[in-house]
Image (cartoon, rainbow, N blue to C red; front, side, top):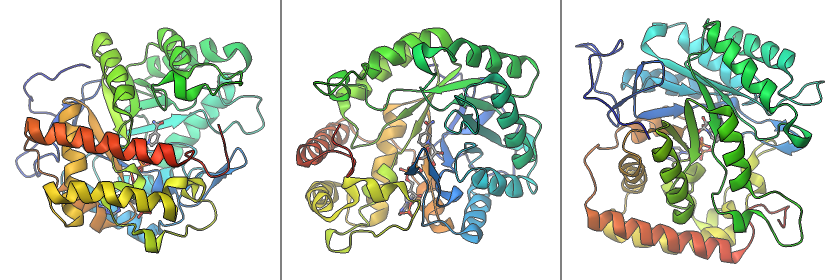
Length: 376
Ligand SMILES: NC(=O)c1ccc[n+]([C@@H]2O[C@H](COP(=O)([O-])OP(=O)(O)OC[C@H]3O[C@@H](n4cnc5c(N)ncnc54)[C@H](OP(=O)(O)O)[C@@H]3O)[C@@H](O)[C@H]2O)c1
């Protein structure tokens, strides 16, 4: 992971702007950003892709716009979206917000790779250009600070991989994007990703093979207290060795780590919400999670804010130069997330969290598969 030089005065930092939430880091391309960044997947709203729900049913546009404005007021200046988040809806809302702020004061990251339209694969170069042009139009901007390869499906035998990389680098040379990103493997534990009796390739090996060809400027990695620690230790070492900057996603376990879902009130999500497929949002899993969150409450406090801030401080400290994204569906959530103190946790607190997180994740995994409609 690339470490920061002492923060210079960046383009957005001025005497009137509030301190950057979580501190500051520098993106490839040189823009200075807040380390707590804003995930814009939820504000895309309900959606389906590849025959599955992949959106959020809890977002409302007016609240989303309030949240974006509040985030900027509070000093957050990195906003992450993708073409497929609400099939352009997230980008368009972000674009509406961007009309009111100086473009050079914010970093905008987007992605391509899950929507293939009428092409065989989303990484067909002509299709990628159409998608990027649409993304720029939706956002009302002439460039992205990061454009990422969102999906690891590069077709049979990765036939689209080299073309995709070449296309991204062409976009970069044209000044349309400042940096190329790619995502890490979902879980960096190959044994869990290759169920016995299936022909699925080890995602760990596949990720390394793709990484060697893409040579991304930045990596997007899932991490939170419920991610297997061994998995992220592997990807952390990998990023460190290659000196590649990192953006962390799903910091709050998509709401689970806020402790707001009591087992007796398991959320009932509407159509197009991917969480309706996830076992961890159902009553039996929430019952297990509750016990483990109680162990956190005992040590860190009983308010929801205490859990939220503990999760985010843990990640800010584990990934000392990374951007940590949190998605939102209201300005109140944005305020709570961005008010996370930057003060470090003690080594004892970190050790406690590592153990508590591991116990929670192992108990949830032991109870059943992650998706309610998949057994692999
Ligand atoms: N590069 C990649 O491949 C990739 C993959 C996944 C995500 N991402 C990015 O990472 C971002 C963050 O991940 P995420 O949005 O999936 O998950 P997340 O940040 O863990 O959770 C976001 C959701 O949790 C709930 N929430 C957030 N703050 C809260 C608070 N203070 N109190 C109560 N509830 C709160 C909200 O949902 P409800 O109000 O509905 O409960 C919110 O939409 C995404 O938005 C996206 O931009 C990137």
